[in-house]
Image (cartoon, rainbow, N blue to C red; front, side, top):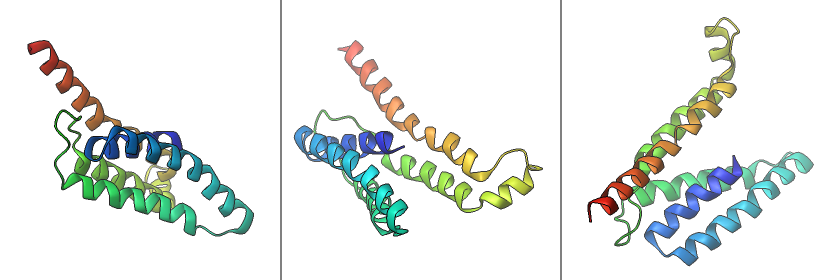
Length: 136
């Protein structure tokens, strides 16, 4: 999940700031993600993980309100955040989802499947970019 999250945030920063900033941001998230989980496991302190995840979502919300750089990939960041919010809701109501499905599948398990759909807006933007390139 950290690798996907780092790539998503790096792409967002690259699309709105610069390619170099996006690369630096992605590498930083790749390093800080496992470190924040280690802090959580070692001390029980969830704050670093919550700041990384929450800060990433806030960043995506800000990017959703901004125009990308000329020629950059135009991802619908608001849709990415909406999909992520549904995934987090499933995680939050893990036991209730498990009970509602007759103990067939948990909310946590469904969260991962739904979170994978956050790639859809990125893939859609890539498809549009490819179609535009073919029309030139």
